[in-house]
Length: 113
Length: 111
Image 1 (cartoon, each protein chain N blue to C red):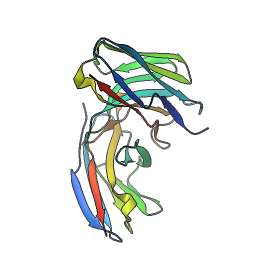
Image 2: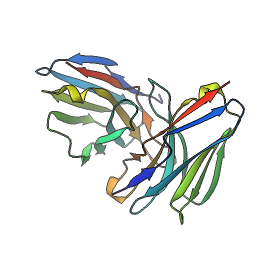
Image 3: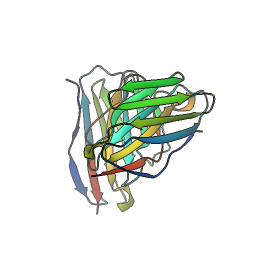
Image 4: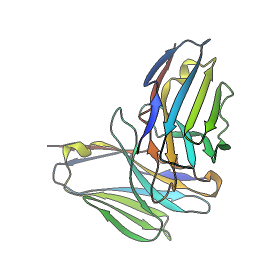
């Protein structure tokens, strides 16, 4: 299996809702990442998990809460989001982000209403 | 911190050659990566240069000059399907294993 699977593919949520995004990989990659991408912009780093431990939190608002239950799974819990949080949320994994690069999931397109 | 500069747009015709440049400023530089992203799709890994020189992978090549903090992606024999956004990315000491992406270059290939 050489894929990163993200669910759901699309999500519409209200500002008072709580929802979770899920990401799964079975390539044995040691690092997993959440990125946020707005239209016509580059992916913007949110969180990094290395060996299931949160290693980088790029000053992301607390309404985004990451979780890594095991080495294959990554969740992003969402609560009380704002309309400006609407974006494509990308999960990626890597073993060696240099020579092997990241493997990205197809993303969750989130709309906050 | 780190910064990457690349042109915002490039246009070319089928069969042509195009070069997308990237200049970077980072601390503790490890290497320069390139990713392709089609509209509505996820980024896909194209190439990585850790050392100076040219790396060739089919129609795509990537070059790095560490002394100039500069690299480029060269796309040959352009096809319509190459129309996409191309991002250079770096990993440095502050980012750990995480990649920081440039603003991206939109390549439009016409017939």
